[in-house]
Image (cartoon, rainbow, N blue to C red; front, top):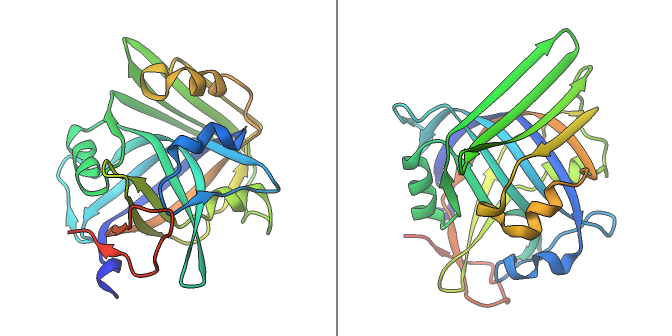
Length: 255
């Protein structure tokens, strides 16, 4: 394992509810980190509102975090790609991430420069027979916002070349830094099985986190929605890319 491939965090990500919205590429231009470009599927650009559970979280892959091992996260994200040494790295950029513990938000901001915020959160899972209901909520400005989805049947691997495969199989993260540079980090997990959602929606007000434009977008019907079963995950230590759109293949390790 190289210096840039040291495990920073391990956990299980479970019951990922993903609501996916089509947007014009220009909508995201100001958020694209240096050294990356927008990724698209079938000529379409997406943002996703995602809720899921962190379970059994450990720092450096081995150190349990008392009172911080199990928690919810909700994030708004979009998809980019970067060419590095002949390899196309498909990754995720987070516009904002919500967690219920201040220490978690602080750590993510410190080591990755991610836009984490702390809010009271809750979730509900209801599995009866072949039916599944998933909800994730957070409170902001004395009101609750919620994303919910219903599915049925058994989960299955996404079809090759499907939107579900495109959304779930991005194994890199990119975070724009205050100095104009970019941090890149690798996320490792097996491909996830998914349920297509028979019902999915978001309700609430996100203007304090995402601004008016994204708040209006999330009130629309998603272009697609599904629940991913999840798996154990490893998040590796980040590396700095240069402060230019010409990304190099040997980035500097984060200190």
